[in-house]
Length: 380
Image: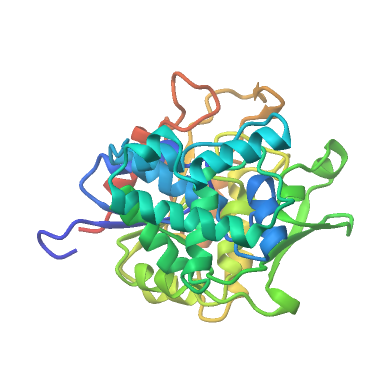
């Protein structure tokens, strides 16, 4: 790393699981780039995506709001972008949206005219595209603004994100791993059952969760390959650390490796550390798995991509296994490490075992402990 240059950390993740790590890294002297999925098919993103056929913006907006929080940006624009519509009646939600789109909301009324005008332009672009029958209930105003910017800027998501960041005065970068719309994530269970859609994979019932996921696939419109976002490829060139996780393994972390161009770009950066962060708990996607098995799955997928070298990661961060028996938080057990020493040695991955659990929130990562470990691994 050149003297005087801030280290650049690229973090592949989903939405909420890496929030504390994201916030902790922003308190360190480093540049941070978040890479998020573009195949979210649930919640407010699903409604917008199905109505307009555009790229899902929910994870992008959520990561941008985390950046804003970590950078201390709590102005009126951020408050508007972080607002959510009522979950009451459709008429109530439509009336609430009109307060924003017509500039009558108090936060907008006191805003500087240039900012106010830009937000109103994007909200009105969104309203014109979405049609009269759209259900605004529980929708995110930030999602509406970002989608409006996407439409207003010729469906260029990178330009929309750039504008959104400027509106919110956010320094950190957030990019979807692909700029293509219509990307679908699917899985095949160990019994051959096929599951279509990210939202269905994260909500496997007990039977499907017990069977487990065997394979995942990404596909673009009409089955086309999913191409990497050029902004992501540029970020990977200058990365000092490329971090995967924490997050939902099969829906938020692993699928990034299936995007054409991502693996070769990572492999070309021989300088960067590649670090996998083990989750704290199992989930519906990973019931019965452990960290060692996740590394094996990732390595098999990695080796199947053009341009891949021998190992997907240089390091793995895993929590201390303090008890010789299974312990749970709510419905899910802690994620065990399994045969991590053997698998790490076979794959050439260095193990970093630490106390990474938040002492105040069981089953969640201590962002500061994770950030400290990541900083200690940065190349000199």
